[in-house]
Image (cartoon, rainbow, N blue to C red; front, top):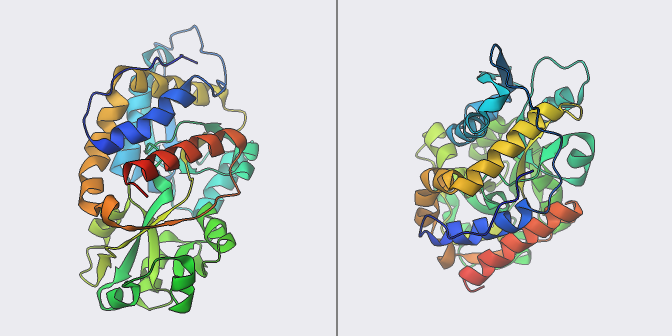
Amino acid sequence: MIAVPARPLLHTHWWLGLLLAPLFAAAAEVPSPGVVPAVYHESTTKTYTLWYRNYDSPAIHDLVSLALIKTPEYGDFRIERSVEMVQGRALLELSNPDRSSIDIAAVATSVERERELMAIPIPIDGGLLGFRVCVVLQDQLDRFAGVQSVEDMADRGLRVGQGLHWPDSSILQVNGVEVVTHSRYETLFRMLKNRRFECFARGVSEVLFDLALENDPQLTIEPTLLLAYPMLSFFFVAPDDTETAQRLQLGMDRAIADGSFSRFLDRFYGAALERLDLDQRQLILLDNPYLGHESSDIGRRTLENLRARIRR
């Protein structure tokens, strides 16, 4: 893997400095998943099947493309959309030696996922996944006024909706949050509207995109709370797919080194973070006991940098 030197950041957004500092430090520490092939695959076009929810996300689709573009020695490529399947099924398919339906998925990491699949250990959104705000119904906003802790949420009967197979569900539960789950992401919005829970906790890097897709005036972002815990989203590939893992790793390393990853973060997340006013929110810190050692270290440093920046 390429050793990434420390260098000045190309942008002045506060959050880029805060998020990329742990990435630069971690890039020289994590092991490379394989060996870079010396042969240039000039005559072949490799098709990579990306999990459908990642394919439909402009940010993740662009980042996969960026990593592949940065590695021309592997040959031409094409990205295809997988069939629609819930996250748990997608990861099960990815671990199947006879798989044909999926090659890459970008999801939150955990010890179990890193044990069963091959992770490319660079946070694809700079580590933002563990910083969460609540999508709520407009007429429920008053119930969140003055909440300062998990205990306050429990006292007011505030439940959080999450995906059945998402690591976040276990993280929230172990911290004392009442969680309502469903296997399908799209169904969770219907459950929120049907008042099965009061807060659909979404990452600050994804919430505006979510609401734009839903396009429902009943839904809004609760303006006062920020749930925070170390949580990283990685690219995952099959445990035996070392070539795809190495290509993504090398492409991400090069994107960090030449500044194109920082420009990616700025383009997709800069305006959103400014609109969410993170430094004005009540920070509720939660533990995440489900990360491996390296992932926990990166997540902890990212979270500490955020706390220092917003002085909490």
